[in-house]
Image (cartoon, rainbow, N blue to C red; front, side, top):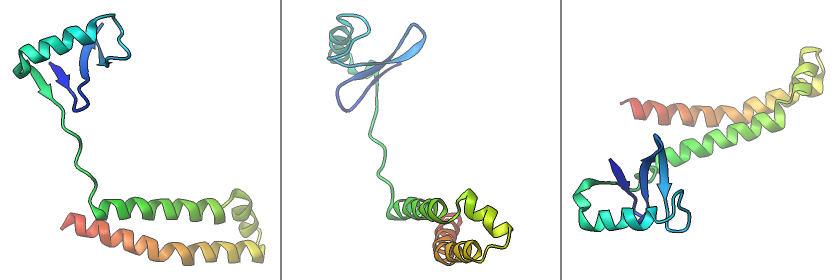
Length: 119
């Protein structure tokens, strides 16, 4: 099956592999024009590809929370900080506690969003 995309390009199998056919970049000269002519003649022979649904506000927020948690981990939970905390360094322990303080509300919000998904 040949796929017609919304940007008027096509996805076909070429040498057994999916191949994106565009007017500006053809693996075989004339392939786009030939495929376009086939589409215009018999559009029912092609599968239409529709754009994906945009993410919901909840999905967007989940992504934002995960990014914020990653930033906290990157900033506060370095290998050096973890090693120093194991050795009892007060500054490192305080830094990890600060990371927990910042991350906990985000984890809670994420858990609530995930729980709402399961209902």
